[in-house]
Image 1 (cartoon, rainbow, N blue to C red):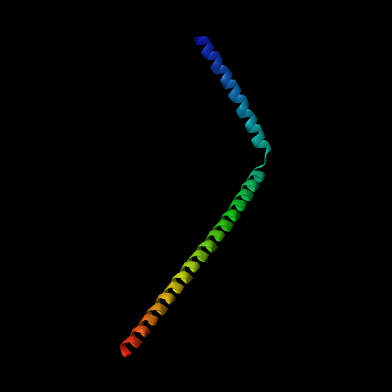
Image 2 (image 1 turned 180 degrees about the vertical axis):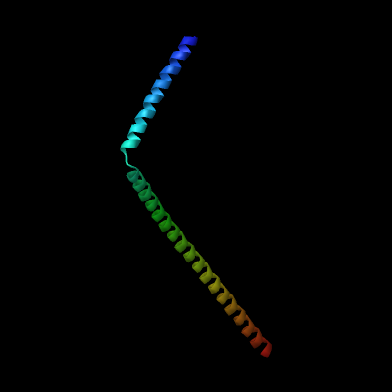
Length: 96
C-alpha cells in the first residue's frame, strides 16, 4: 500500500515536471513583445466595443428622455387648451 502511494506520487511528480518543463520551453520560445502586442490588441478591441455600446445606450436614453418630454409637453398643452376652453365657456354662460 505504502509502495503504491509512493509510486503514484513519483509518477505524478514526473508528469507535472514534464508538463511544467514543456510550458516553460514554449514560454521562452514566445517573445514577450508578441504577448504584449496580443494583449494590447485585445484590450483595444474590447475598449472600442465598450465605447460603441456605451454610445448606443446613451443615444437610446436621450431619445427616450426626449420622447417623454415631448409627450409630457403635448399633454400639458392639451390640458391647458381644455382648461381655457372650459374657462371661456363658463364666461360665456355667466355673461348670458
